[in-house]
Image 1 (spheres, helix red, strand yellow):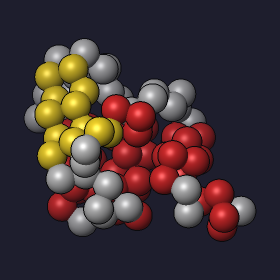
Image 2 (cartoon, helix red, strand yellow; image 1 turned 90 degrees about the horizontal axis):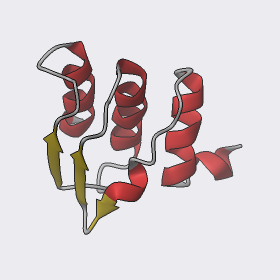
Image 3 (cartoon, rainbow, N blue to C red; image 1 turned 90 degrees about the vertical axis):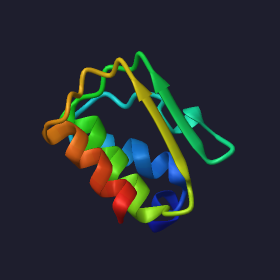
Length: 86
């Protein structure tokens, strides 16, 4: 099990499963350490999984671009930003 959790993509899918949400292909959107999500509707479970991913793989991204994600500035956005901050 630890071997699977050390793989960034599998770790993200495991975390989505743990949050009981459908895993969006967000990790595949990381290119050149930049995560660009335009038009992806993000919910609290996906953001919590992404937060855990970012906490575990701190060097995965250096830039995030978000637009039209339905997050606003509430708890969903906070989940994501806490992962970036870690």
